[in-house]
Figure 1 (cartoon, rainbow, N blue to C red):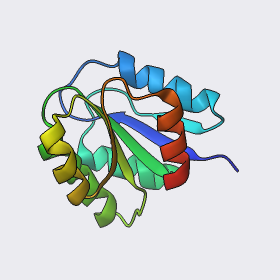
Figure 2 (figure 1 turned 90 degrees about the vertical axis):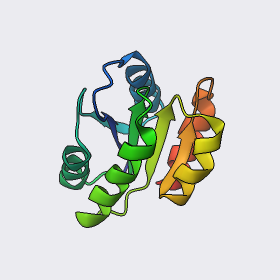
Figure 3 (figure 1 turned 90 degrees about the horizontal axis):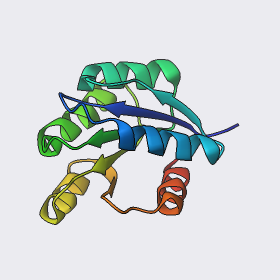
Length: 126
């Protein structure tokens, strides 16, 4: 059974090239990837994660709203009974990463994160 990963763009961030590259990377590594598309809410991400019974949820954020939206996604997941870890990729200032980890985000991938590291960490979280 392969690892099931939900990949989503939360909020008003319309830049989706990077998330599509990561989705393909995960797929090529043998994972089953569910991509929700742009402009998702924390609640729609959580509902899809539960409906699809995913092992890991990944969100991509380039809008600067990561400190607000990532904790909302974590909360929505837990409220729906999902224990799937949340990983975040995108532009995250170094000072925010530690706080995101304390707020329930399992891993943060910034610009230049290697594909091998992304796959390895997601597999370890699943």
